[in-house]
Length: 141
Image (tube, rainbow, N blue to C red; front, side):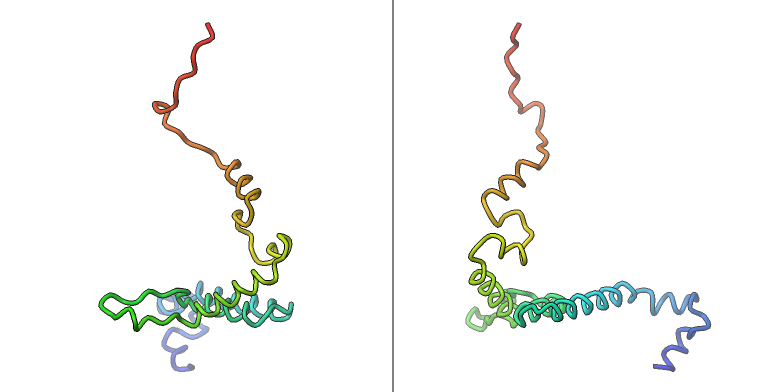
């Protein structure tokens, strides 16, 4: 580690070209990893279920939730990933725990959880139309 740090200029040259080339491209990923860890620990301390934590971990590791078999491979060889299993477990847990809409609000913020919220969402969207396709209103003159 020390030799690597010396190769990129160490702490004495933290604004040098070598530092910029080796360290700066990794900064966003490092910040995201720190944020993911903080969110995971906060969720763990809040008492979220292990299934939810496992799903979050799989998502942070960028595992495909439902991988498709690669072209040329036999369909029989297809097996769902561990992330897909985690997703299915959490989804089943959410469905079993959510006897009312308020229970879903802890997990879901999408506007499609009820017909009423979906209708409200759709009515709030701006509509753009081609003026040539809009029928002209008859004149009242």
